[in-house]
Amino acid sequence: MFSAALLKKFQHIPTPFYFYDTKLLGETLKAAIKSAEKHNIELHYALKANSNKDILKLIKTAGFGADCVSGNEVKQAIDCGFKVNNVVYAGVGKSDTEIRFAIKKNIFCFNCESIEEIRVMNAIAKSENKTARIAFRINPNVNANTHHYITTGLEENKFGINVWELDDALGVIRKSKNIKLIGIHFHIGSQINDLTVFKNLCLKVNELLEWFSNRNIFIENINLGGGLGVDYYHPDVKPVPDFENYFSLFRKFLKIEPTQQIHLEPGRAIVAQCGSLISRVLFVKKGVQTNFAILDAGMTELLRPALYQSYHTIENVTGAKRKEVNKYDVTGPICESSDCFRKAVELPETKRGDIIAIRTAGAYAESMSLTYNLRSKAKAYLATDL
Image (cartoon, rainbow, N blue to C red):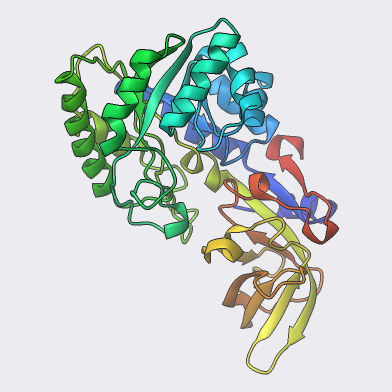
C-alpha cells in the first residue's frame, strides 16, 4: 500500500498523523452507491465513524445522506453540505438544546429511543411551531454476535424502545400533535461479519411490520442501521466490502410494499480501510520476556485496542525489506498500561525513527481521539494533499 515515494513524503511530516487513501475511499463510495441504487436503498453515512470535514465532503458528493448521534454531528453534516432532508438523528440521550437545533433545521427524521423522549420532543416542537418527524428506534432483542461493547440490540442494552413498550409509545404518539411517525429504526451492533445476523434482523422486522399493519399503521421508512464489518487482519485482500451481498440480503428477506423505503447507515464499512495511523518509533526497549517498540502514537490517537482489545494490522514501513524478524509489544507513550496496540507482533528488526503504519484506522480513530496527558490532536492528511 505504501510506495517508496509515499514513504519519502511521510519522513518529512511530524508524527503521529492520520493518512487517508482517497483513491480507495472513492472506490468504496462508488461500489456502495452503485449497489444501493440497484436495490433502491437510501444510504446515510454514520458520522460517528469519522467526522473529518474533508472526508465528509467526499462522502456527501458521492450521494450519501447523514446519520448523526449528537447535535454537533448534525451541525457538522449540514456545514459539510449534506441536505437537511437526508439527515437522520439517533441517540439515547439527546439534550433539549440538540433537539431544538435539529427541529429548527427541519431534518428528515429523529430516531427516538424512549417514550419520554417523544414527549419532550413534542413539547419542544410545539414551542417552535414545528412538526418533528420521528421513527421509533426499536430494540429487537437480536444478538449481533460481536464485542459486547458494540452490541446495541439486546434488551440489556440502553438503546431503543423495547417491543413490549410499543403500545404505550403509540398511545403517546396519538396525543402528540407536533409529532409525525414516519418510520421504524434498528441498529443492533457494529463490526458484524456474520450476515446471518442481518437475516435474523429482517425476520424480526417482518414481524413488527405485521404488528403495525394489524393496527392500521403504515410504516413508510424502514431503517436497518449499520454494522457491516471489515477485515482488520487482511486490509489489502478485499479493501472494498461486499456491499452487493450485504444490500441484496435486505431485499431478499424483508417483506415490504413497493411504497416502503429501506434505509441503511454504513460507517465503518465506508471509511475504515482507507485510513492508517502513521507513527514513529521513539525507543526500542528490551524487557524480561519481550521487546517493546514504543511509538509516538498511543491510545489517544487510536483508542479501540485499549477500549475493547481490537486487532489492527501493524507494519514497519521503513524496515519492510529487513530480513531479521523479532517480536515486539507495540505500545504508545501514554501513562497507562492499557496503552498497547498489540503484543508479540512479528516485525522486521525495528529501530528508533522507523515509520510504523497501523492499518484500518479510518473508522473510530480520529473521531475517538483524546487529549489525555495534554496530548496535541494529531493532524490528518488526504493522499491528495501530499
